[in-house]
Length: 313
Image (cartoon, rainbow, N blue to C red; front, side, top):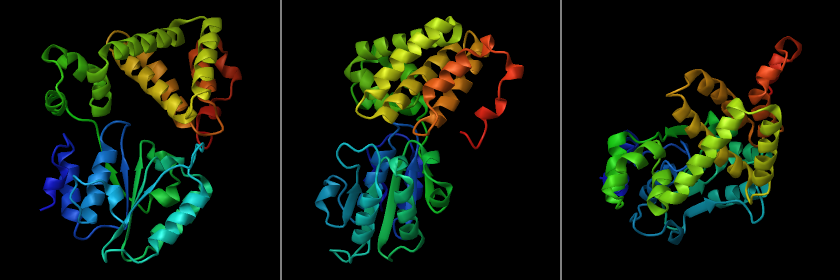
């Protein structure tokens, strides 16, 4: 009955089927998790429309029982003020006698006070309340909160699913294979290629050049490169998002290098993984990337290996 609500969304067939089946008896809280651009937000919005009995073609904002939680202007995190306002609204009676649905986008940006406030709401929800968290970084949520959410894993699309997506969005036939390879199963990235292929090629070349410096550059070249990248990311409107875009591009370059130099790609991938985990923490991604790139110049017997292990990351 509810499967039609997910029409037009390519891939995620199992997720769509499970969501459609759960609409009549939903859990009180979900977290839609997956890479940026994979389609998790769209899935979450369609699911919210189903829960509210809406036509998915209509804007969710038009429903009085839908609440979208977003960061305050000029804020880089979701604050406890936002969380408390949401809890107050979720405790109110539904305007139309049905469910009240909250969609918390970029949920990893909830600060610890906001997470603690929402934890109580998720543990003791009003009967009509459904919380829908959306994040590209589920590990950014505290384990106490994450353990109380039903995880909806939104994975990358297969090559055939990506082909169908690209054809449906008017990609040029001669570019299909290039975009499928470059987008790595992420529709949002594929759309950027459709809209501006030259710019995306330039981004790839820049990422490849940066990775080459990290893999084979002199200490001076590595530090100079990282200083420039750090300034650019920190000056961005949303520094954590800028760092993740950069690291994602470098990971894609790393995958390309793996076909010709798997050992170097593996070494770089470890540094990128640690840097990714450090975004938004007290440890700077730059420090981890530099440490990893310059490790061959360091006398390892004199260095604290434990720095790379939990609880630091």
